[in-house]
Image 1 (tube, helix red, strand yellow):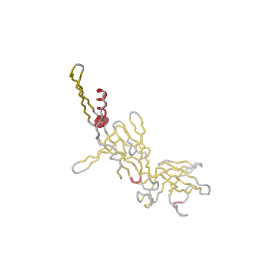
Image 2 (spheres, rainbow, N blue to C red):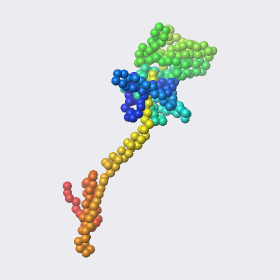
Image 3 (cartoon, rainbow, N blue to C red):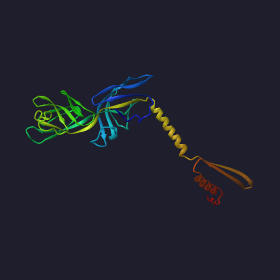
Image 4 (spheres, helix red, strand yellow):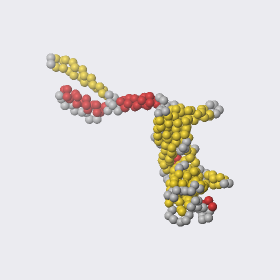
Length: 308
């Protein structure tokens, strides 16, 4: 498991993790309780259920690994269901989703290589033009002649343990897709489509129900994403306080406080003496120019500025 998103938000309330893959539904998050001698996971029930409908990973190099160093973004599509209905949401790496005081954001992923969709190249056994068919994860496709192909499982590094298919590693060393093919008459057979070109006569690459199968392409994606769920019932109040603090700091540092005093004293009949004074907390040169213009306007005399 590779962690990449814990820095996205401050920890004000309870935080737990929710592992999800397409088709899974969760109604709780797992929080870790730390004691002196052990770490105990505790399940916290949520007031709604979360169903994962799709996960996606945007890679820098399409033919590279699915590790964090080769990734631009992780996307998890979820459906939240509660007494108010169903709500669709998309959780990005740097774009959390907020709902009822809960915040969902990307925290980690299971690095087992899988396929979000596969593209099969089907060559008729009796000859003819090959056709390409794209099937989503756990989806199916029906050909023009009525043949149905179900996408059962994906193995990034296919190997056989006896007669049981397994993956030798989480990396895409020998990718293969496990399929279930149903003919128009209802006959069903299991089959495997490989990305590598198999030699002629290989048993595992033999035609199935009239078609020779080849894994022409696939979209890389991890086994599952792990969302962090953070409960912040008072976060709005905290954010309001932060906003007021920012406004206060802006008023202090970006606005100049200027004051001008004027003392008027009579000296003789019709003659008055005016004494001006001023102060500012910043931009003293600019304030000096304004103060001189004010003095000139009152006295009617031109005042030359001193050379500095």
